[in-house]
Image 1 (cartoon, one colour):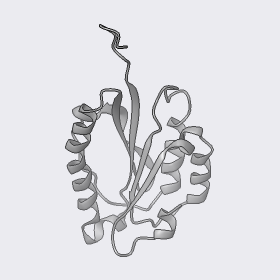
Image 2 (cartoon, rainbow, N blue to C red; image 1 turned 90 degrees about the horizontal axis):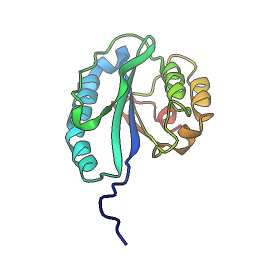
Image 3 (cartoon, helix red, strand yellow; image 1 turned 120 degrees about the vertical axis):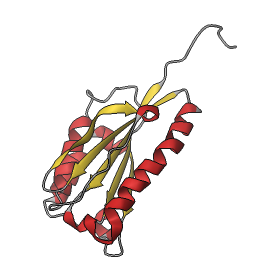
Image 4 (cartoon, rainbow, N blue to C red; image 1 turned 135 degrees about the vertical axis):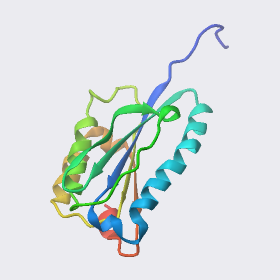
Length: 165
């Protein structure tokens, strides 16, 4: 039986991009492809979010090259997001990026009522740091274990073995 004037609260769904901005991403149009793919995905994500009032889709992004840092640090509602293009240059601190991400996949700052996050790594998969240590740190977080984890390989020279982990 429905309850009039009762509104269910929505649950946050964190969608976090991990974007490789290393020098190797400048070749073969990989950086342009990364920016374009994210920019073009946002309207569809906003439409799906609008059709699912029980979830609040929040987007964040980590960029990594010589070091990892937040490109979009604050969880931003997908409907309000304006993507700022990333640029390539430097080495590939992918392990650093995974460790930075691990820090936000703890409760708190993750809300206990949140839906499992979606983590999307976009890279040519050629890390120059201790990727395995970063991955181990990430996977110790309960929210990382529950997450939907995706890796998008860019370029014919992508290291698929790294990205499949």
